[in-house]
Image (tube, rainbow, N blue to C red; front, side):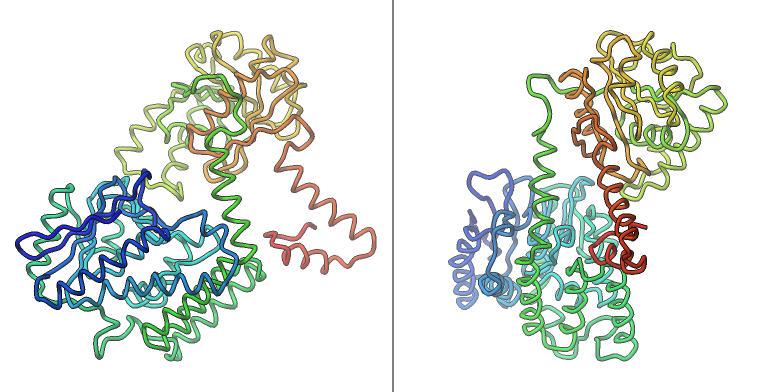
Length: 536
């Protein structure tokens, strides 16, 4: 669980290695394992036999976060508060042993894992771009509960801490260093431990800003009139945006406001209270279920037909180089899938290709350098001829909503596809079964409904027509996963899923209006229920 070693320089190394797990997580088991280790460190220090401590991991990740099962099942706020305070006590023992502690991070440090790192005096990370660091709790309707909010406030100041926590961003090591969340980078695991030991040998004692006399929070506290005004404006913005349907952002702001006005340990208790209330709220439970358990079930292929091998297309044909077709092309090439982009003329197809370049440069969740952009653009071939689809594994029709036009272009494409290829239609309103009757192989015809804008929206509806084969559904499912989207398999009924939900909302608003409910009441009720806009 936790391996303790000490070298001749009196530097102890604590190596995290949970039994029977691919990754370390912070659960009751590892918390209890810390008790004797911390006691031993204390005794070693008292005897003068300890100069510093390194915390690292035997696994490919450092500490992947908390126990999601515990988070989902937690129902008693007082029990959560007590457990959180106990864990915070361990973190305080780490940062106040009288000896410096280094977090030697060799893999992902997420959530509670990064909170542990923040409790250390120095943080060094192996500089690999795939390593993720951060506090993404906001995405599950909660906030960091093990000192993360308060320590971040002391390190960055109220405003920067709030801005970071509200985004819940995961950073690679270089970006984390740029934002002052870590202290140093290492080329590999060997240099990681070398640098950790070198720093410990250089530093005799280490303390945190919040434990030193005269230190203050960067940018001031909530007692400062200007900061108090900023917090008040932020609170008003949150209320207007979320209508009290999403309590986590307000809880983070409250914790920063109240925590900045008191000493560190009192601030940590305030954080624990808000955390316990959030964790046991229905909003948090719903978000964990939908965004963790349900999403993982989708990604594991719960609704994917069984008995078919995994599919990843080498090349995808796209009919229609307009806004949607270009967006789908951008998503494909950014996931290293080549594209043949077709329109009625080569010139229009080239315009679509240029549109792809703009989309790639402005993708919010990814940042590509010029070398990557050039490589992606080389993967796009433009054409006006369906013959160029001959080596495509999949062709996606993305022309405007006209059945005659859709039928014409899919028939033309089908003639040039090999026996293993299939066709997907990005239709919104025309039944897949109806469209599939116009092609020679309806079993190889499926709906692939991308939401707008396709480069941003993660959901893709895989629509099963009356004749669509299970193999085609499985391939479509795998394609959506290959481009980093979330597939949901839906039947070929009016509106599929997303549009039917939205239209039901709109129609209910219209019905209420016909029944005499004032329009202003209907609009306000819609927003109060959590919808971004009213139904009318």
